[in-house]
Length: 267
Image (cartoon, rainbow, N blue to C red; front, side, top):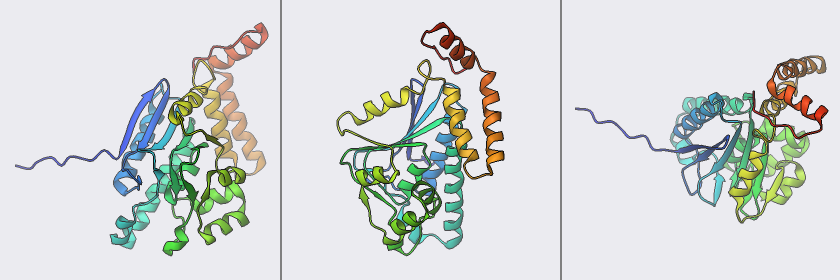
């Protein structure tokens, strides 16, 4: 009689007051394998489909690493075909984050290097824990390139020339340097980091914010970023029209006229 093989939980998922917390769970380095990426993909889809989730929060288990990227032992033993499809699936997974009209925040609680930074760059907002580690794309030192979107997303954040320099030198750098370059948005104090991140995330949930508007702002930017201006403006108009039909838009406009705080319901 065959026995069931227990699947290791490599991604923890929970929700808290409108925020889905998605935690990569293979400490200390939280390196990802195909198995982890499938669980991460499932968590992203679960949060996307949950009408009571308005913000996705990505982080890593423990306090040493957000993620050190792809598992090198796995890559060194896999054949080239597997490696190609592994990268393809990772690309598709991170595009799902960008395509989902819900705000995605990366809580960078430790070292964020290689594929870990590639995951973080697919988030909309990146907040690091003070003095928690280093950040960078050092793949050139392994004889490869950042193959999970790193060459494309980093260049869009810091510009072509700076991105090429950072990747060909292959050094890691501080969170403060990353903030100066626009790779991360903010640095929070070490103490009570996750509590403060959650407080930050909840500001984008109802009744505090019109969550649909937050999501559609994200969607308009992501979809319109690299298409011609005329097409981008059409995307903006379509998203605006969807919002005009929402209860939250009616509430927001009425509250402004009545000179009172708006109470949003994400409807």
